[in-house]
Length: 248
Ligand code: NAP
Image (cartoon, rainbow, N blue to C red; front, side):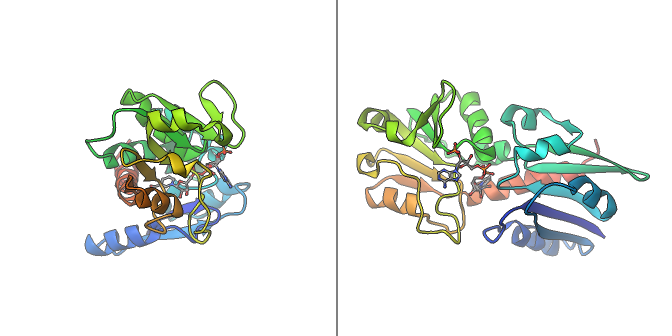
């Protein structure tokens, strides 16, 4: 039996288990399983992995993509660049384990982007693990961006209250990487000035449950193009699978 799974807290919103269970069924991988492991803390993680001998790989989600790094033995370049890990490869030898962190959100987000993005600056809402992956993609594509935070720090971050008409008009790509609007808190939304959105804006929400968040709904109502995180979810999941199943 080979066991894979997702660690995070909470996990009610996640479709990862459904995705992998469908995959294992359609590819007739009857000895493969994927479980959700809700963890209120990461202490004891290595011992839990070491004892759970059928565990072959893990995904990591909110709120642990950055915190997990101190529990790992090594990071590949993707995880290093993003400063966040969403995939762990587990290598066992005798009673020892080696844990390597990767970031497949970079691949997933990049693959999901349409060819006809507005050519403008971008705003990334939130500064957590997923924001790190989004930033790497924007940098690689040469798209200038600013991160929007409740507690901005450093030169590239601003607060929500700083989003004035000029910034909103020159930032036609707005990417939500906060959990605001995610199931079950579906009535919440990032506090941006929605009245300055136009038909030229493209709103991307990394959230996929619900399919249309309040953030996307407000944008759609004024004619913005919108996209949710479902394609990204599938793309990052397939990349994780590739990492777990290939030899080093
Ligand atoms: P995270 O590491 O906890 O970061 C979330 C960030 O959002 C925080 O750093 C924070 O930034 C901001 N935030 C948190 N609570 C907030 C609040 N109440 N109000 C305003 N801002 C808040 O989480 P993550 O792992 O990056 O995940 C974020 C979201 O992206 C989740 O909904 C996750 O499901 C989704 N996601 C989807 C995919 C996909 O494949 N579709 C992949 C990755 C992530 P500040 O403190 O700077 O404000």
